[in-house]
Image (cartoon, rainbow over all chains, first blue to last red; front, side, top):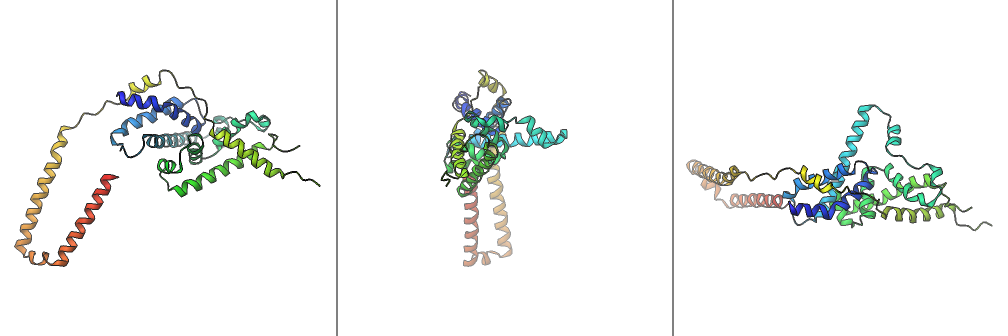
Length: 175
Length: 110
């Protein structure tokens, strides 16, 4: 048990910040983080030392987030709320007028990330924020490395498209 | 003549830099002070080893041995041994055993 507590202490910050980036939601972070570590605890007896624990943990994080998104989608369907309306409720994002200041760029990127699918978010987060190598990302997402590189490029391009749609009023244009 | 850089290129470069910086910046999160304590209280009890399972593999070995002896006796009664000791049959049997061994080893490592 002490070993597991040490593992939690070493990795809780990573889990929290990765969940925050992947979900864009700070309210349910603790519940999701608990779920991640509970799954890790149950899986530890089957964990093989050949793989890094961090790789294993990231995979659990991605799975927990995917499960959470599926649960939210099912809940939305059950409540018969229009998809657009729920997106506005769940992900308040700065409007074009608020993006005029460069200080809002971070928030704009966070908002744009929330418009991407879970897979795109995961790959961008693992590569940029968590600085995982292509090999590690391939192991985490269980994809060939070539697929990881392609998906990373495409995710970044999709993010750029969303950012361009939002950024035309930021003021990067020459006046 | 307007020699400014095309707007798209300027926006692209600026967006690329801004995106890189923003993507690398981790969001600020607050870990509740009692997170670990609450987690530890939710951990399931470690399951005790099941003593009943200890007899499983020895029992399977005995069963396998008895089955083999039964099949061997049946083969001898039917005169199958003359057919089984033919080189092609021996090689085929060996090949099948090698394939199954590799599969079992690969699954054990997976």
